[in-house]
Image (tube, rainbow, N blue to C red; front, side, top):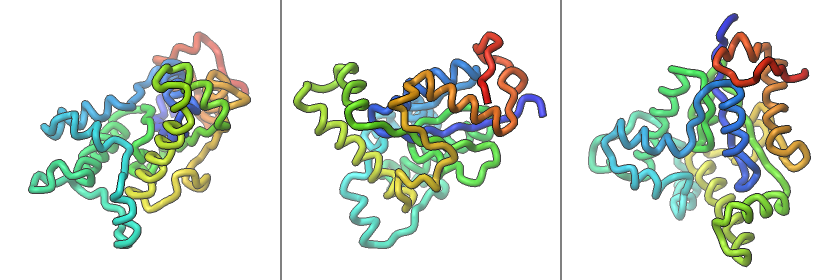
Length: 226
């Protein structure tokens, strides 16, 4: 089973370390990481300005209430080139097409964007959710210098809410339901490097050989202990 393929999706609370974990894991395994780069790729493939995808990125807004009241089923069919070209739902369909193509073509890591739902049913899929205590996340977000100190709490809660609502809107499921993930990690104690190690351990438990199946890895002979 040389060069076994894997697609890893990472859902994450804001500040829990999803981007850093994804970047470190991608470097270790020698595979590509896709985060906001998906927006540019989707823009290139659809011909729609990238700014439209950024506006709709991981946000449901007031549409969530409409979805709940209308009892509408989640829709990720083929995108339309009609009058609803730049509607949020259609942008999501374009984005989902790109995610499915990436998963079909290569081993990779995909951050957020309901990728675990979009790719549901793939045998090579590993779905990860990262969470952490509020204080741990607050310290990490403060170090990013994105917000004034008195605005940290408000913005962390806002972004978590946006991600939760976005997931609910497009999947009809709860964002933090452990049944939708293969591995849920509370990143406080292991930290970023430890969380990456846990994921690599999990890959080995599943039968992956980090040297054989990921020939471009940067592990330098290191193997995760199982």
